[in-house]
Length: 390
Image 1 (cartoon, rainbow, N blue to C red):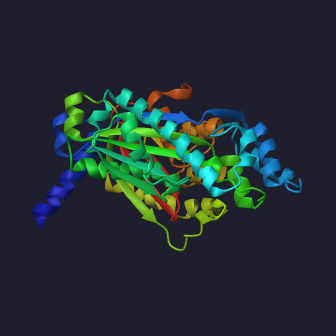
Image 2: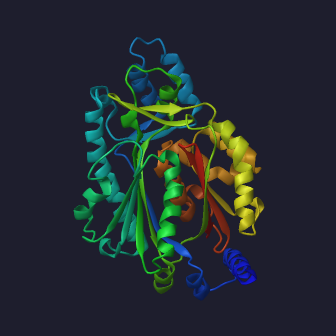
Image 3: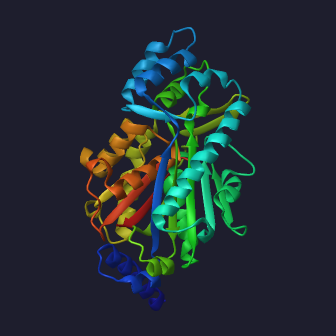
């Protein structure tokens, strides 16, 4: 029993040492250090300033004009300056049923998914034939065959590629997807896996619905996609991958919160469930969860060099900052992403990851070997945390 305890303690110390940059590539392979080889985000084809979207959607959500002032007020409070959409604004009133909206989801989603995966593979220096597993996630449309299946011939993926489509995780799926891909690659050190997120949130907006949840969603969410290429430890060593290592993950479900976020799905499509209690749930649980998770890796919040947080909205980000004792600068990349493109559901945190890795918007790139933390929350209600070593 003591030998097993010593092995567990030794593994934890090795993870901590790798975070601190004290262990070389041989130890990475021995302890399963999965690497992120490439991240690429893409945006939907039609870009608009927030004010133009507000005018168009205000008329759609409130045809009689009774709630236009509310729409304007809520949109202004989101902190979003611009967004990209799957369609031109003038086309949205024509999407009068679920089937029409979902047809657009498949058509545009395939184009964006193809661009995202090709871009991520290019950054990783890999080809479509190298890919062993594709995990796809979305919560804004449905397809069977799923999007990644339809992309196999378009991308030239192998006929024996393994697929894992995920539906229902919502905003948390970007971080959860990285965690689940890591789990797979721990068992396949030579493997290559792709995580694809496609979210076309604008297609879920309900016509003539001025409920607070629908109005908030109409002002906060945008459309886009992102892909992450990850490789097992042996392949990372052989290729000399310098991208961040994915060291550990943790998932948390919260009691009595199933009605906090999600969808009511009916004849008109996806009607959003979005409770104003989300910031309160963050405030109640996030601090203890992060402290416990980092403590198990012999780290503290103050050790984290970069936070990669999902841009859930101003109140959610403020609750994250308060819970963890962070200042605006420590979530600056996330705040800028929110302003520039809005909340892209599961794709958003992957855009923030790409921005962080590439030093976009003037933010310095992380120092190699320093720890980073990805975090997001979503339907369930739940949280996912992923520890990185830059």
